[in-house]
Image 1 (cartoon, rainbow over the protein chains, first blue to last red):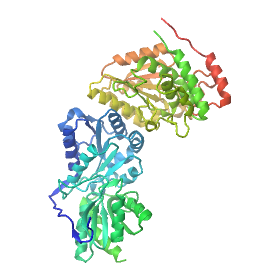
Image 2: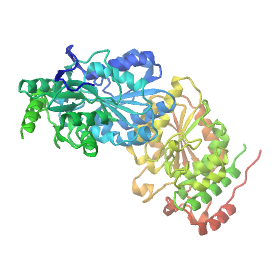
Image 3: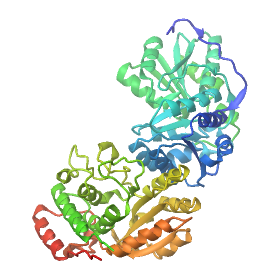
Image 4: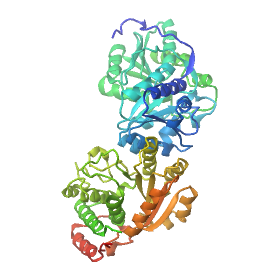
Length: 325
Length: 277
């Protein structure tokens, strides 16, 4: 890979705004039309998490389980033990925290192929406020053996991530996605490999490793920084576990300065994962951008992203301050 | 009706021997469930010990993983693996983990479990899959009574009746004891039958040491349509070893090698013989 030339490696074109949850939901339906082992499990918020595309198309393969996440994970385990590929989707907060022990024992210890959709990730959930904004789900799930965590950057990638989770894996998978319509900019024929980071932009001075829709914000932040003579590379870390350690080390060797950017606490998520790799392999200056040990609040998505400096402007400002400090 | 008290006796002997060898583990519940296990594996389950992954087998999910010794003893006794392997219970490198772990490769283990409150949900998932595939095999799930204090159990209870999982049969080991003492003192469960009934289940209460009653209960469960069945099996913790029967101090304790001989003697004295007709 050529990391020397500054500027965009690929022309990323914003096709318009689309929620990643829609990409996930359409992805489940598409995968299910090719694979009759796929079974859907709903926890009352079926439409909200994008599973209605599947439930409407395949009602005989959809089970309504009510507001009972712990049971849903167990049912998923039983279905998987019978050769089905269950897809259970609910808000990330409820999956990762309410059903944490079921995910640990019934799914991960048994190492079963089930897909958990972690919806409403991050502060951009907006007006619902802190209770419904998943900001610690990665931390909760990242330590679990056998677990794979995917965090696609847009709707197109969420669609592809579901196909890969069905076809390429045989273990528990958590796919994290957001509520709001965000830039849908990756190509439908993109190369997407679980566990392999995508290099979105070359740089010179530093590298931003982002995940989820903050990849787009990081990309825009890099453009802003370029105007000030700072060339930032951008990496899309769409797989949080297993982490592409080689990509992190290569970026640290090349750019010396690393920034992580995520809609999650800076502890336990992408920032921590990258810090671990750097500390053990190639110590480098690191700035972790995310939520800093506090809960979210109500507000419009764009207001909250601005307040916590997670939008392009905020990311650029934080980096500029840091690089000059 | 042919009973299997002889098998239950042998299973109890193996439970005691393996626990004494291990030096730790759950004696009370394992002895208390020996009749249920003997009846299930000899009279009820359709299974092939030589072919543990047989696709048409009935499945038994042990939600209370801590009574693994009675599951292991039953599996060994019915031919899933050599009886000698019971000596490795709870030891480093053993396939006989303290709580069942599928990863370790012991034949006949359907689920890694032991964190209470999870097994019934998994059994329900299995039952729903069989409904989808029009398989007429059945899924059984053994729960402890103390375990019913876990809220997640009642999520599964609600969902099983909602989805009319009549191919699912839960068995509750109603020995009335848990680690801190009697269930009714620690956290009241009565009236237990009414509670399951209110959730839409077919409820059968039996003496969990009476093989005829157990066999009849399982038969009744099999012909009950549109609702799942729970068998509330009234048992004595430590059943068969008089000096420790109904003593919650023996929930999580294993006999020492010195105690083993006396326990086996007591077991022999309390032995029941099979009725033949």
